[in-house]
Length: 432
Image 1 (cartoon, rainbow, N blue to C red):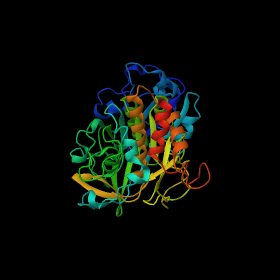
Image 2: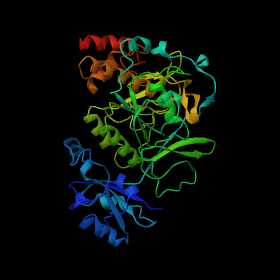
Image 3: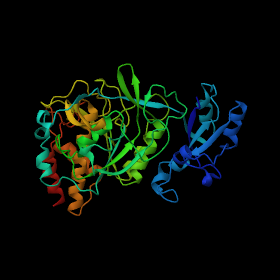
Image 4: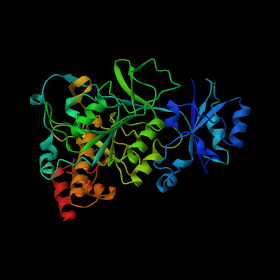
């Protein structure tokens, strides 16, 4: 297996102007660089290791922007080992002790358990409508969204031919590339960077239906007139009888940056990755997205414990827990991620893979309700000639969600169940 190491340097590498970025290198290996700098090259030479070196990120413009430089994205690189070496366990520690290296981490695969759906051929007549629970119809009386407001769904992709999602996709990309891994347990496309994020298992399609479904044979999405950016960052691996979404964390990072650079107003990440060492997963690139005023919404996790899952546990991310149809916090909701709010996440009916529909439960289903809510608020602000920032959105969520008890905020439910009627009343007042 060809391993990778990601390096964040204190200064950009000399002569990196002609170095390819990782996305381009995946599909075109005609330009290669085999050296890093003198001190790193010495360590690698002493260990008998040969490498290729690429930039980790693609710049948003012809030159690195101030936002990219602020987060150090312009000085982050990927080192790909040319052979299936048995790397020493202390390699990262050796690199971290070098004066030029700020951060180093080995290739890491993040996984997310995908809720086991109940596939159904039934129509929405049999599907519970949770709109009344969160007062969705009141908010939609002001707007159902506008196409210029984009919701990036970073997930297992999207069933591109599903009738509920026709005309909804404004942009798409597939960042799943598992080169160097044993892919025998994976299903479908696992290699190359392209713009065809076809969903083989349905998780991303289910989430996308919740945010923007047309409502033909299911309940209409939360923000049906907004558009979707379909970003495939998770492949599907079969683990026993269960399906697990799995992707290289650094490739997920590339997907986050791509969404932020290509006009996303809201990013939904119905996935969560544990911290297993090194820097916090997604930290730099999430900070970059937030700095561009992109709202990031993420599932809190589904193990019902205080385990922290990322990006939900990162500062500035809106972590979402799940409630059932009575508004009671679902027992599977993980609460270590500093939950901001809760939303419907039990027996949610939505579009699914292979042009079907399914019921599914999880904080994965709750997160897109909040994503859609944010998209509606941003749409209304834009229609009235205003602009919301992330601070405004968090304040509205804090001040209008229905508390589960007398406390302002609780560990298991954050500020409470989203109330879109009260949110829009406050929004309209603030923008008047």
